[in-house]
Image (cartoon, rainbow, N blue to C red; front, side, top):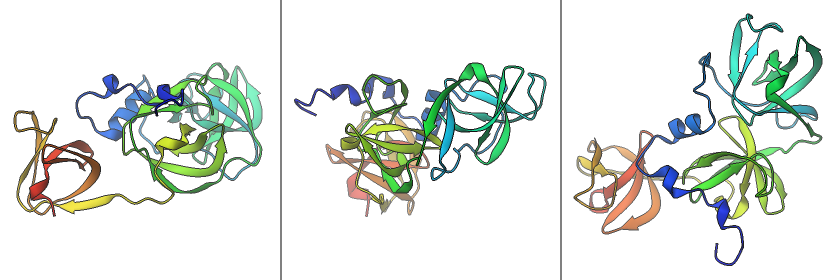
Length: 245
């Protein structure tokens, strides 16, 4: 964004070289792959709720009792908001996350208040690689670098040029200019022949996989050298546009 002084809101493309599943990249960036991580859906307390929240400073176990030997109910990702249930014991705080109540260690929680918390009003997607921050300014911590075309749940709250969003249940802020309009739906194309998905827009680039004939792919806006950037089964790369209908 020329002359805006906000170029640092564009994610470091050096961190995104090569093709990687968007969901896998987000999991890695959010630090979910830590010891004792258990499977489970991640999400935050209802965005329409009002009251006190904690934001996690690291991926943290939500346990069924206030001790380190208690069963792990799920793992709250770094940067997520957990609703304060008003009880603490043995260094643990009772919170609710994704509709599940349990105990998280206070060492990994920082107080925040959400009164009339942002309401999610639709979906959008990132228009380029961009920083996903814990607050609405460039001084706030970067939770993750989101790839282009990452889908986000969009709120009605905008502060200092940043919009409050949720990504896979994690709450944060993205510079508004790098979000597509409300409710923008992806464009899908169909392959007319078995088609190589390449890491770069040329015939010498590595073939990531072969997309079968008749497959549906999500088409991006980027085009180069007769190729178009597409996503197929969470892998993003370049496909020759002549074989897309």
